[in-house]
Image (tube, rainbow, N blue to C red; front, side, top):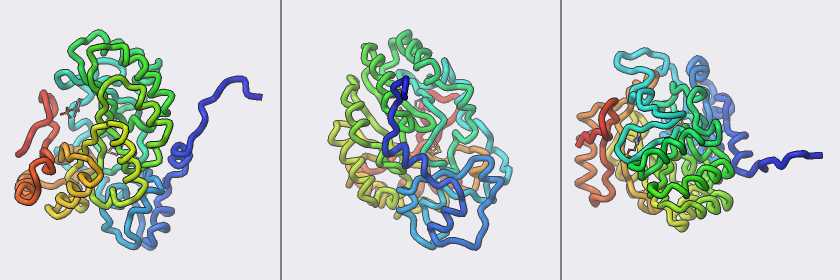
Length: 332
Ligand SMILES: *Cc1c(COP(=O)(O)O)cnc(C)c1O
Ligand code: SF4
């Protein structure tokens, strides 16, 4: 007999629990046997990729732009000068449990260390999540900070990935945030609509409808091929119908999207799903990701070429995150 009411496990959580964690399973699914995956790299930051995302990879192609984002490689173990463990200076901006206040009017909550996919280039791969987590204690520290700072008009839920949290947990936060009148906007930074689109289910949409503030969602797609699936299109259409403003941020990655053609295709594919390109980040110089770097001069040239081919609203802002600056630093 159950004594306590438990939070029921829903479909997307089951799908996440069944995501691929074993490199040999991924290789087999793609017909790419016969070459090893670096197990030391996996130990540092394990492989994690949902089946929905694997289904969009090209069979038999080691250079598939989706595969390259998740595949542990020998290159990650090379120590390269200038690449370190906290390239964006996040740990100096912590003002409360998991609360980063770096920029005027906006606080960013590191809601969880969990993601639905492990992106090899990620600058948070070394973040000490377990020591700094605002969900601990039912969000009280974060809410107290927001309440006490009336200049905070936007609350950004980041991570990890905030959408790996159950709807019930999110609802608890928003219920209290609704009562803080100076907060005008809520922003999610999430990769789940792209990598685990089943997350955008009826329960999530119902939860969204309880939020009093305007809702912005910054998704994270790096390549047009990531959007080329019905489940992703449906998720984005549902969010759009729910009145969510949809933006995209991408990271410029060697071997993934480092061509003008790939960037133009990404912008077009995003807009087809009613998502506007927001930022194109040059790589944060995190240890283990040096092989993804594209030189700034090349990045600037690419965005200049994009401007020749696209309307202004489909050209993302090329930025770098510089520790200690008051905003993302525009490069172009
Ligand atoms: C990127 C970032 C933001 C949001 O910056 P925008 O330019 O508004 O997108 C806010 N806080 C932190 C700590 C950030 O890193
Ligand atoms: S925080 Fe974002 S970029 Fe980093 S691993 Fe998670 S989903 Fe990928």
